[in-house]
Length: 220
Image 1 (tube, helix red, strand yellow):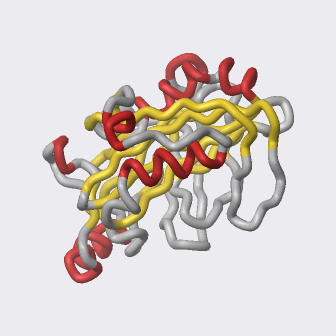
Image 2 (cartoon, one colour; image 1 turned 135 degrees about the vertical axis):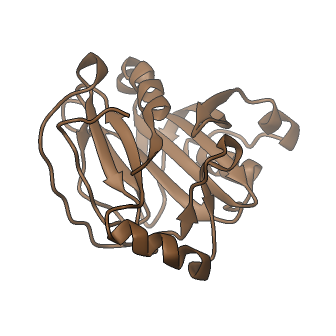
C-alpha cells in the first residue's frame, strides 16, 4: 500500500462532508486521494474477494463495521485525481465528484444505488436518452464493451449528442459526449459518469480510464 502526502479523509453522509489533508502526487502528475468509508453512508460493505469487492448490506449488518470506521479502522475509498482535474464541492448522491476543462465544463463522478439500481439496460438507455440517442435492445446492451471497475467487468457506455441532464434542468448542451461505466448486480449498482463538450471529453478519455482504474478500497 502506498502512503500519499495528499491524503483526504471524510465521513460520507448524504449532505455533510469534513475534509483534512496533507501533500503528494501520483503517476503522471495525478493527485492520490484517500477517503474513509463510513458512518452508514449507503450501507455498503467491501470484502476480501474481488467478486464481492463492492456490495451493500443492511444497516444492522453495517453497524459494527461503521463503528470501526468511525474509530479510524474501517475501509478507505482510494483514487487518483488525473492531472488537470480537480475536486468539486460535495454533491448529494456522489461519492467522488470531479471537474475538468478550462472553465470546469467537464465533470466526472461516482455514485452508488442499493439493489440493481433499476437494471443495466434501463440505466444504459437512460444515459443514451439524455444524449438524444435511441435505446438499445437488451442484446445490444449485453454486447457493449467492458472495462474493469473494482476488479470486476463493468459495462462501458460511450455516446455523443445533445446533452439534456434532466433532474429539473431544461437546458440542452449541444455537441457533448458521455463516457460511463455501470457495474450492476443484485447487491448494488455503481456508476461512473463523465460528460462534457465532445472535444474536451475526447481529450480526456485516457484520463477517464486512468481515474476508473485507480478507484480502489484500502483496508486500514
